[in-house]
Length: 509
Image (cartoon, rainbow, N blue to C red; front, side, top):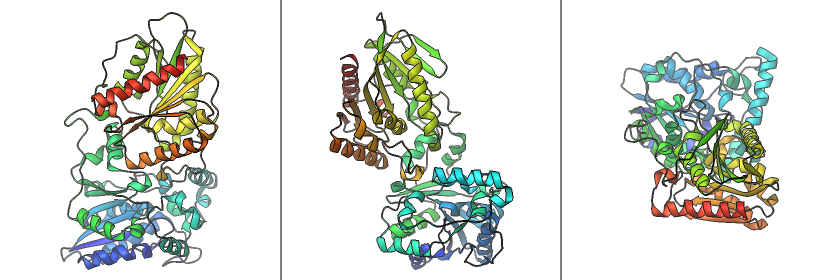
């Protein structure tokens, strides 16, 4: 018989698992929902320091309470912050654990505190500064639980019934800061334990997005192609035990049985999607490289208009080749140069979702470098953004300079995804478009877009429609995210031609 040990996330307790636990028990499984030590919970006596080690001990106590001699397999499930004490305990009892389930959680690493996974970027920064300034005392105290309308800062509440959200709020407890600030210590023993990731697409993560990140070559993600690693998706927000407990129970039972989607090793059958050939035959034109910027120059004389192509991400810092050498970016830049304008690619530092400010600064600096080049007509510039570069469009939509003749975006992410923790940030194109004025916007939309990204595009288009923004949509009904290398069809080629014609028309008018 399988025994599930369920570890809750921040501010929550064993109560969040009630419905899911009941369904697992009805299926014949053993179930233990861990009550983590807290200010008002077991072991939380006044004056007692509570840190990550305290919670690891809580999980260990439950593991040790499960008889080792009767052949029962333990599946350890960590939701949100709960994956940190779950992994810490599994590392010390690796021989007892049959599988670890990451339920809409990150991939904690040795020496890294749970603070690194807190989705609210502004809060994460404040707590890190407090800990750095206060030493041991900086880790003391508690983080108050969110009010009812603040849970979205910790993850999407999509699908959670109002009554369940009321109860979640009523039973929420302060989170001891030491649990977030103390680094996780792992010996490496846990690496031998099979793993399942349950991704909640309503919170901004999917198997396809993980596949893309793995394809970029991030060393931290290469373990995910191990055949012992499986994945499931749930079309809900960050609290599936509240929004879809029956579906969650079914997924956990299937995970325990070794089921789930497995990722192919990078390059096992063919190159990753972003390194496959561009769908158009474009001329080989000279390229000039200055710092992080490449210029593809046309044969025409005199200052020429320019199109600056801005890659998406996040892309790992060590990814090779870097984005400006990816076939899609090179292909578009050469295509533009073949049409008589300067094609520009650049590398910016969007290596994590916390990097948008510096990535935006990199883009702005690159644009100024391009405009200062005597071979470029500084008054005729177009910017073309791709995928995760989409949020940066907010800077240009909100205050478009006179020399910006067109803004284009291909399969863009046009709002921060729920698990990015960017509440209150400036990178919200759907809000910025109200100030775009007459700036032409050319948006290439793919019909087979990832649902979590498609929702941001529809939000943007609704906002653009309500303010009368000048938006042209180029549809690729059968295209996927990154269709230029994934779907080399006539439909896809015509979409690229149409988008480029439109941009060049605005640029040279």
